[in-house]
Amino acid sequence: MKGIVGRKLGMTQVFDDESGVATSVTVIEAGPCPVVAVRTPDADGYEAVQLAYEQVADRKVSKPERGHLTKNGVDGAYRHLIEFRGHFSDAVQGESVTVEIFQPGDKVKVAGIGIGKGFQGTIKRHRFHSGPKSHGSHNVRKPGSIGASATPSRVFKGQKMAGRMGGKRVTQVGLSIHSVDAERNLLLVKGAVPGPKNGIVEIREMS
Image 1 (spheres, rainbow, N blue to C red):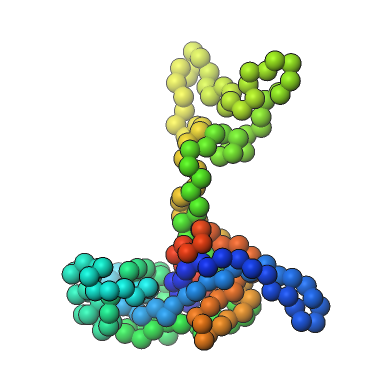
Image 2: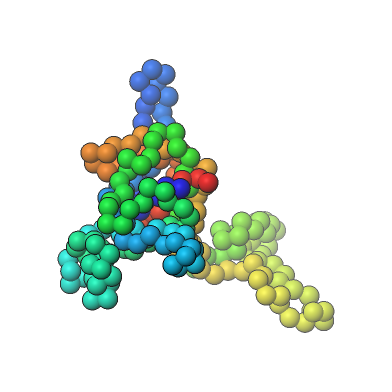
């Protein structure tokens, strides 16, 4: 199991030198991420590795968090602490995880907070069909019937209606590493990943 935390910088395209084929890639600035803690079934009841990301000034994190980092041999303060569930055979507490753990062609999944769309109607939020747009129709973008009258005399829970869209955790699976730039701590991932530019993302090896 391999994993790292990074920041989505945006998308671009890479051209193949031989065929000239363009490949859409997402550029992610990942790591280096110090290993803060290694969870074991004997001590913690589960297997996981806790990584830190984005070093900041000491005043920007709480005293308990600074104490937690210092106790586990990590110098400096970090804004994000993220745990990756699973068995990490190469994880050593106090050492750093870099993009070099990945190789071009590795299958990965990327998780992040999707872009928030605000309050949206049912057509955009749930892909409802619109009503007739001619002959004086007054039901173009309305949701239509949301329940019967006498039975059940209520609206069922979970009914698809208008509301806040996006802004939730999304995991995109089936991605692969296009290339790795160890000098600049960059990962180029084929395809699109969740979240806005500069959003925090978690890159995991597909199990």
